[in-house]
Amino acid sequence: MELLVAARAFELLLGWSLTLQTLESLHVIRMDRISYWPVQRQELPRRPTVLTPLLDALMQPGPYRAMLVLRLILALMLISGGLGLSGAVLLFLIAVVLLFRWRGAFNGGSDFMTLVGLSGLLLAQTGQALGHAETGWTACLWYVALQTISSYFVSGWVKLLRPEWRSGAALPIFLDSGVYGPLPPDSLFRRPRVARAVSWIFTLWEGCFVLALLDQRIALAYCASALAFHFLVYWYFGLNRFFWAWLASFPAVIYCALP
Amino acid sequence: MDAWLLGTVLLLVAYFAALAWGLRHRGRTLRGPWLFFLRAFFPNWKFFHAVGRAPRLYVRGRDVNGQCGPWQRIYPQLPRRAWHLLHNPAVNLALTQQNLIDHLAQDINDLPEGADPQHCVSYALVCRLALDALQGGHWGDQTLIAQAMPEAAAWQLELRMEHPGLPDHAPESVLMLQSDFMPLPARAA
Image 1 (cartoon, each protein chain N blue to C red):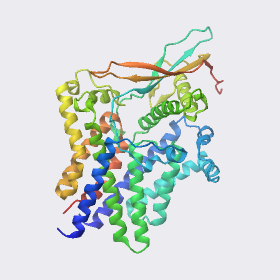
Image 2 (image 1 turned 90 degrees about the vertical axis):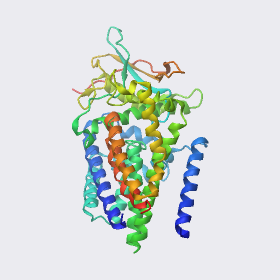
Image 3 (image 1 turned 135 degrees about the vertical axis):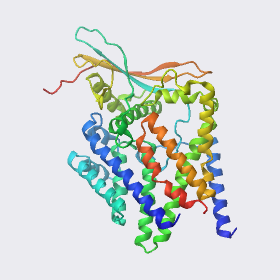
Image 4 (image 1 turned 60 degrees about the horizontal axis):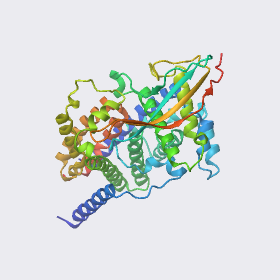
């Protein structure tokens, strides 16, 4: 994959992922009756002293909503290809503010991967602003690809170290506890042989994701199967943000694979 | 193979070897307010990696006659909808609130002997969650608990560490924290 094509695909998909996340965040404002900034602010780091008043101001309903609307506009600009360094900086800063708003993460892994994407974008736009667009985008795509492959690699091998995953016993337990769970009583995943086979297939597939770097055709196949994997994760655990956040990283994986 | 390619391949091999080594060797856990808020910059990518004890929140109400309702678990399990792949705020909010319960359990574990968990921010937020459940709060069109008790005079929460059970480990439920009964705040008219 050419650098320009990979960079543009990355921008499009990251922008799309950010758009969906932001629309959800705007909706969440009306639904959330638990978060309470006067309590949450008590655990903020005391230094720098400017942090607490700054966040106090941003967490007021009006400014918070305005910040999300700004994020939505920036995400649409990213999709259109018209986002420069200042836009990338703003997107990154808003992401950091949202980490404080949600006590470190709103949706765990998808926030982590979105931040990886935004850090990469910042790297690329900085390079571009300094007149080294090619170096900036190459660094961005390699950073995103390495984090993406690490995510599968770690997630796979850490499971293989656990006896409950090797035996397949963990699979129905996690699926039962999923947000769309529990599994029906006659689910195939309750059969120990099926659960063991599925567990081994998924964990080995994850653990060997690094092989995607060997060849772009392997990378394409890996990314296509990853889409199916993330769809299943969404289907059972409701993690829709994971689907889009990881999808945004696939152009980087394909670009970094050997041609 | 040219020198650049060879160098890149060697670096990649070294990186993933170090990553694999790190999975088997637990390092020191760094903690602090900045690391707590900015932990997303240091993702560990360990998803669903182990079956173990997980914190579960329960709530119950007590009416004016002193009669207690049943303990009810607050745990998100919602119906799937066709549009959830694109737009799923209720489920994501519910998962965030479950995460809050995990943080409370972690905070309690980290407290020094004899310290009061009521001073933790996570405790204050979990109280809001339990109270909201009792008063009929919902995730989308799904209530947090089956039987809300909005007219209760007092309420109480319980945090239990629950193990779902494995072939070599029986299911268990261990009490971690039980609050005193607390009066319900007056509701806005």
